[in-house]
Length: 300
Image 1: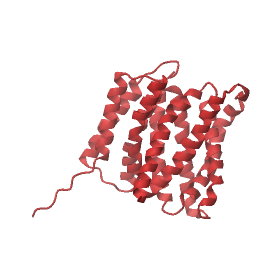
Image 2: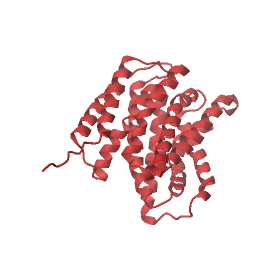
Image 3: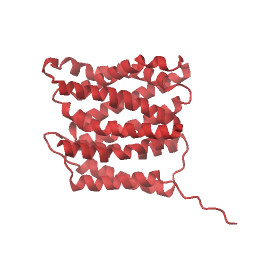
Image 4: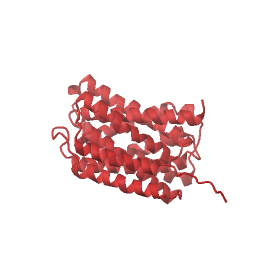
C-alpha cells in the first residue's frame, strides 16, 4: 500500500473521529464540564500521550529559528482552535457546528494563495463566493433547540473562527513537517499549548464536582482526549506530510454528513431548511474550490 493511500485513509479516520465528537462533547457540556475546562483535559491528556510515544520517533532538537513555528502551531492548532470550537459548540447545535467546519478548505485556499502562491482560478473564486454566502446564512439564521443551543448566532461564528484557526494550523504544520518528524513537532506544540490554555480553563476544572460526574461522562471525555485529540492530530500530521494542506482540509467535507447522521439518530439535533440550504451552498463552494481545472492541450 502506497504512502499516499495510507495518507488518505488517515484523513478519513480523522473525519470519522471528529464527526462523532460533535455529539459526544455536546452531551457533557456544560452539565459536567465547562468548555474551557474541557480543553485543559484535552490538551494535558494528549500531551502526556504524545510524550509517552515520542520514543518511537527520532531524537531531534528544534532549531532556534523554528521555535516561532512551534509556538504558532500551538497557538492556532491547540489553543485558539480548541477554545473557539468548544465555546462555539456549547452555544450551537452539532449539525450547525459541523457545517461551519466545512468552510476550512476555503480558508485554507486563501491562506495557501497568500503563503504558497497557489493560483486562484475562476472556479475557485466562484467557490469562495458561494461558500461565503452559505457561511453567512448559517451564522445569521442557523437556529437550534434553545435548551441545547442557547446562542446559535454567536456559536456559529465561533465555529467559523475554529475553521479559520485550523486552516492556519495546517499551513504551519506543513512547514514543520519538512524539517522534523511529526512526533517532535506535536509533543512540543502540545507542551506549549498547555501554557496557553491553562489561564482560560484552570478555574473551570477546579470548580468541577468530580464525585457527581457519571462514568458515561468520563468515557466521553476520554474519547475526546484519546481519539479526537491524540488520534486525529497524529493522523493529520501524517496526512499533511504526504498530501497538500488543501487536500487534507477537503476531508472535513465528510464531517457534516456523518455528524448529521449521528446527531439525528442520537436525538441531539434536527434538520431544518436553513441548515439544508446553507449546507448546499457551502458544499458547492468547497466543490468549486477543490475542483482541478481541465488542461486543454495545445493543438498548434
